[in-house]
Amino acid sequence: MFWRQGLALILGMIVFFITSPALADWTHPLSFSNAELSRHDFSGQSLQAAEFSNANLELANFAGADLRGAVLSASVVTQANLHGADLTNAMVDQVNLTGSDLSDAVLKETLLLRAIFTDVNISNADFTDAVLDKAQIKELCAKASGINSKTGVQTRDSLGCQ
Image (cartoon, rainbow, N blue to C red; front, side, top):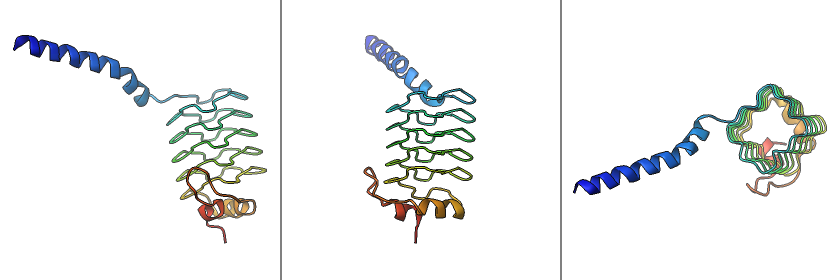
């Protein structure tokens, strides 16, 4: 009986120490705040809850990246590739997105107040329940088209365009 309890204790310790690094990654998200990351390639990476506030992300590549819950507040994301990125529940407030590619991106429940959308490609993007002001919605509706490949939602419908 004693050897069974000892074996159970050893197995429990092995499982705990093997899973601890995974727990540590979740509790301490990546932080790139105030970083110079222009032209950096983040394509296809899992960046859930990563923090990019006040970062320079000009010409960065986030194509297909998982940015759910990420914070990009007050960052420069001009001419960046966000094609197919998942920005669900992200904070993209006060971000300059001029010339960026948001085509086929998922921006569900994303905070986008005071974001700049000059010359942005939003074809096939999903903005369902995103937080935008009326002027931003009007600007985006003027160029909205297509259906998001992941969610099946029409871009114009997700923005509530007339």
